[in-house]
Structure formats: structure tokens, C-alpha cells
Length: 435
Image 1 (cartoon, rainbow, N blue to C red):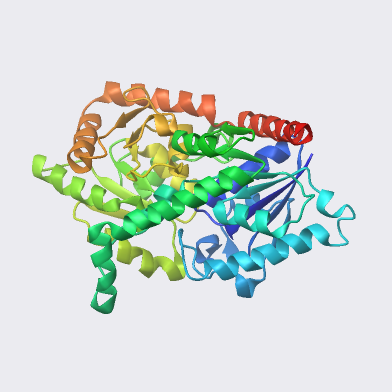
Image 2 (tube, rainbow, N blue to C red):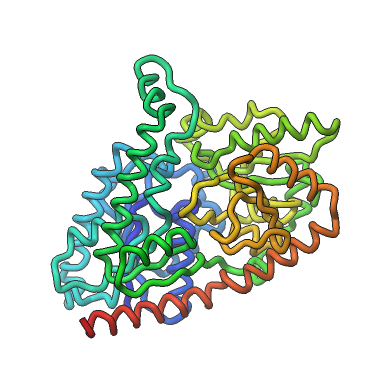
């Protein structure tokens, strides 16, 4: 089976969307499929480059052995931040031109029949494929990373603007802009569900929306991640933690990007709450990869260095991040919006690190079995309660750690996800022949 994976983002990169794309590609190839990649061109990414111009040691996995087409560098967004931007339409135009050229080039004598399916990652990639490729074309499988009906308004979170940009906050405070964006995003979700040839949903809410509007084959399937216990390179979590001045098993970690939609203001407020309860509250850590030119923008949304009671750790590699997560008492997922699946959550489960989050069934979690679930409408006190409880209960921490690892083995192993995906692609082919 020959598959083309199309991602509407710069690649390679360490953010969640790119990691899902990467691990899906590797899992499908390991299952016997021939995989080609097509994405935005990646700008010079300081997060991928170490001193002396060398790439981070694990970055080879992203491209090793893959045929990788990229849109023209001039058309690709320079920022690596998640979410909408004025540069994205030009990036999508470049992606469309590259997609059509790739499928019509003399390199592929079969033209549009060169692939058995096209797996599109993010709504923009699905829109590009649907509008660019004439029929007959390969089946287009939409990998729904999130729900735009929830996602777009989540990017409104963040500090208030000054000057004329303060007018933006009037609409934000009134809810007018939020409701408008939710309706617009929901319209795109439904439009895509009606027109693609098949779909993969990562979460229960995404599956509900896709089934509501779609009559083609689809599947709820959690993202894959390689088993860290099978890694040839030992993580050495205690050593990594101590290098950052942390006591293994005693700190709580948020690992990921610092954009406003991650709602790190909840973590900041919970840190203040915990400081009021005890003279020595458990350490709260925010760990993130360097963001290069986007770092100042990101920190304007989430100024973690100024959060009382929260410590910021900058990590150089995926292995270092995994070491910190493995050494933590628990992993914190502060985002409350439904639709997306945090890759940080999969990392935590794979490493057997308990999770404190605001959504349970959405991500396959079970309260008090593999996680502690807080109340989305009372985020600060319930997050502080969960941290306080887990910090002082070793038996509970051990039970949740075992449950986290068991959930990873049940849902996220690459071979399981790849076999389910290939079965869905075959079902899509049979469905197209029957209609």
C-alpha cells in the first residue's frame, strides 16, 4: 500500500501535531506501507539545532528513509507557533501547488493513481487536497487533530492588548468574537466531514462531530507513540531531574508549548493557592523546548518566569523532556477545550507518569485509575486539590502510575494504531467501490 501524508505545518518540529504526523508515518511504514510526506518547508528552527549547527540527536526519526516534499520556502510561514496566522493562507497555497505537482510529475508515472490514499493532517491540509485534486483521485482520509468549533476561540486567550488593539478585547470580553469563531470553525468541521472519503478522530468529541455529518467510514483512534521502555538509549530520569535541581518523584510538570490556548494561567493561579496552604508546596515545573524567534511572542502569552511558585526548565531534546516527565510525580494537562489530543498526555502514559487533567473520557482517562480529573468550571481550586492530594499519597501515586502505563499499552502502541489505520483505508476503498 502506498500512502501520502500531507501536513499543513512546518516539518520536522517537536510540537504535538508534527509528532503525531511523524509517529503515524513511522508506524505505517513499520506495518509494511510505503510512505511519502508533504508539508510546509520548515524554517531554520533553533529548537532542532544544537550549538555548532548540529541537529538534536533524535531528529533523524522525522525524515529517515522518507521521501519528503515541501512547499516553496518563500510561501511557508516563518513562525512555528500553533494556531491561525496571516501567513497561513500563503502557506496553504504553496502546499496546494506542491501537492498537485507531486501527483502529476513524471516521477510518478501513474499520476493521480500513484497513491492508495492521501492522509491529511489538520483541516487546512484536507481543504487543500479537496480543492486541488480533480476526480478521479485517491481517497482523502482526514486526520482530525482537533475541532475548529472549539479550537479557534481558544487562541483568543491571553493578555489584554494595548492601544488600538484593545478594541479586540471589547469583542473578546463580550463573547461576540468567541461565538462567531466557534460557529465559523464548526461550519468547517461539518463541511469537511461531508466531503472527505474517510476520517480518523483522536477524541470522543471529534468522533461525535464526524459521525453527525459524515456517511463515510471513520474511526476513533488515539495517536501512537513508540514505547520508551524499548528505546536503545536509557532515559536516566533521576539524573535529568537532578541536573535541573529537582528531586525525582516530588515535582509536578507541565511539558509542552507555552501558547495561551494551553491555559497556563490556571497553573499559575493554582501555584498561588498551594503556596497559601503550605510553607513548602510541591514544586511546579513548566518544561518547554526553545522556541527561537517565537519565544518572545510565546512568553507574552504565558510569562512563566514571572509566575510565583512555578519554575521554568528549557530542554534541548525529546529524551531530556521524557526524562523529566518520567521523574515527575505527575504530569499536568491544563487545557480544557475539547477536540484535540495532547501528545504530552501520551508521553506521560507511556512513561507511567500519572496525569492530572480536566477531561477524562475525551482522552480515554479514568478518574482515580490512571489520572485525577479536575472540574473544568472550577479549575484553580480543583487543580490545587489534586496536586496536594497526590503529593501526599504514595499509594495513590503508585496506583495511578500503573494505570497510566496500562492505558498506553492498551491504546497507543504503534503496531496497534497502524493495523487499525490500514484496516480503515481498506474499508474506505471497498466503500468507494460500492457507491
